[in-house]
Length: 351
Image 1 (cartoon, rainbow, N blue to C red):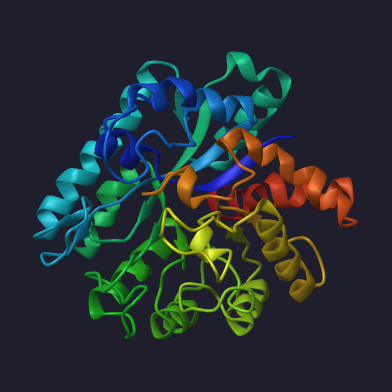
Image 2 (cartoon, helix red, strand yellow; image 1 turned 90 degrees about the vertical axis):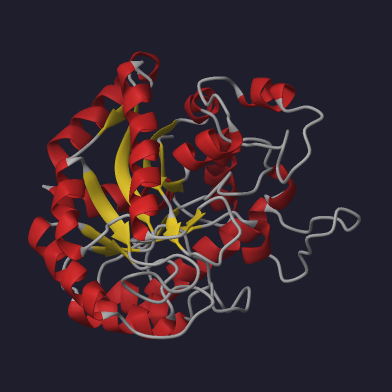
């Protein structure tokens, strides 16, 4: 079954970790054998493994934060550096396009044609991607979103962790900044998608009130199942359902299981069943299957050590349809979650 993954940091993984994503996961792990560092030799995502798992379409991100006090590889002293870094990440996607590995999909007609071709014969078709941005700092000033749009950008999450130039994100508090309000206005005029993932609660509610265009959560889980501000409250989920938004469930172990601990001496308790728990909770709140999706975030700064233990590579997303069927979901319901809800969003937003 075709799977649309609404959050993959492919370029970050490739450039930060010096990984050749055109190789199978096992080959990348072998190349990193003996390396020291988080997730070395533990990656789960590559283009061949996406194909093996029928992940024929994704939202592929660029990410770079203007965070002069930050210590992570995505932290930079100012927005100019964040812009340049994100442009480099986009250049990687363009290189993969020239190799015939990826295909950027800018509008609904291209997405519709891609899905038809993929379903007819995926071996002959590049993996499709919708270009997204996690954290708005690479947009140096609001009007520059027009430049990014011309380059193919179709979805933006205004903040990541901490404050950005436009809003407050996970681990910080506050509403939209003046530049954020202007950015959302310009995004609406262009027909772009607002990704509310990572927004601090005040920014979340203000963004939903101000932005009357298409909304999604690319990768977010349910607070009732795993407490913490990174997850959505039921009130937030219901507000997104009211906007006909869908929420991509994330696979990061600490977002799935309250007992997960970053300690190699303690077993990882996360399982794919907890991914299904989050899907099921969203569906129960909605009363239908039209608002849950997949937003794995696999290899988004972590690897197999921080993923569900019954997942080896991204190809194991194909375990989910059977697990949903075991819980009583019909074939059409499962198709909604695996790809249908994202296709509905793209048709509405990008037609």
